[in-house]
Image 1: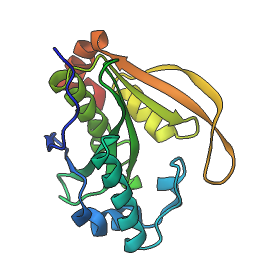
Image 2: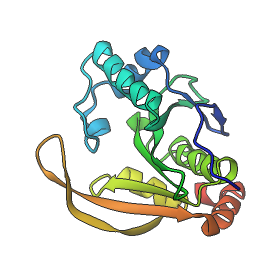
Image 3: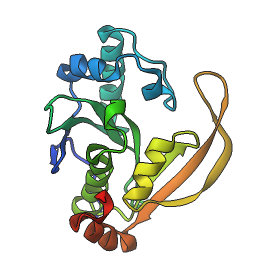
Image 4: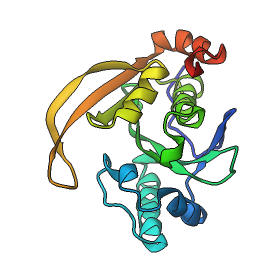
Length: 200
């Protein structure tokens, strides 16, 4: 199967939907973030302090998507039907059959919940099943334990650490932890999810 570039589509799950990121999502996204320092601690940006600042962040993501650098989705929990975070495909390398899942954040009340896990699972599912990628990877701050936990629970393999890799917004140095799944591992991960083991 030839690898296809990700499209801005809606991906439906049991607990959440991933919908193409839109300017219309700004008010709900700002409400979900609430300038909560925990949300932005491991991202390369400062917390938005107003809907205007959140709008500027969304505009930046949309511009990157328009340039073919990423495909971004809002995370919409079915329980609220309101955008409560976002996630994206970045580092899209079709020739090498590799894609990153990144730029991820969501309302802290969702951390560790089925919505959090399913967000990552849906992006992995779409990458392998619909797009034909051979490798999905995550590059996470070594201090971002909620994301590492979510990725591990859905079957992501911790590969190693790049030490003193990136400078954080606060000036400290970040170690970056690599996780991945490859196509040969995907059938077992999918089976575990479908049987409900991952959520237990």
